[in-house]
Image (cartoon, rainbow, N blue to C red; front, side, top):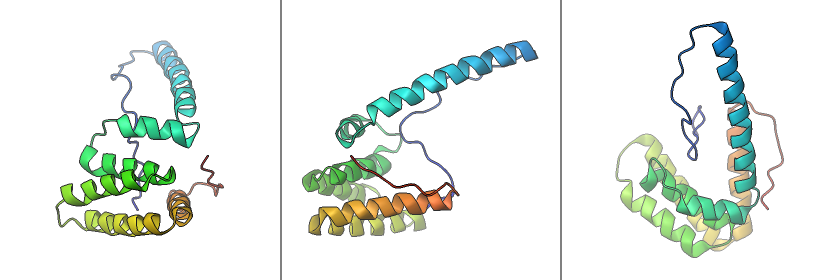
Length: 150
């Protein structure tokens, strides 16, 4: 797991704004705060449940589509109990990501484990995904939270 955050849906929303004085800076910050709140509320609505999330993630064009796009599509499909799609996307990831990079090898090993788990028991797969989220939160020094998938 990485020590940094990665936001795979969403990107830089505005161009750089150079401020020439404190008044302009305050005005720009207020605009950005208002826009950020709107964007957060939009994401909350779009991802309010697993079915909505799946529709968005399956259609989304990720920056690293062959690797992370397929990973995210497989995970959301598995969380929705669609192992056919999970296998399709994980297999694409395994075939397309040919490299000897240590982190990609680790990712591929995790993908194989997750595929095996999902194909044996969907509930165990879901619990493993929750565990991965909790471990990641811990690494980022975020508070413990119950992970609810609805």
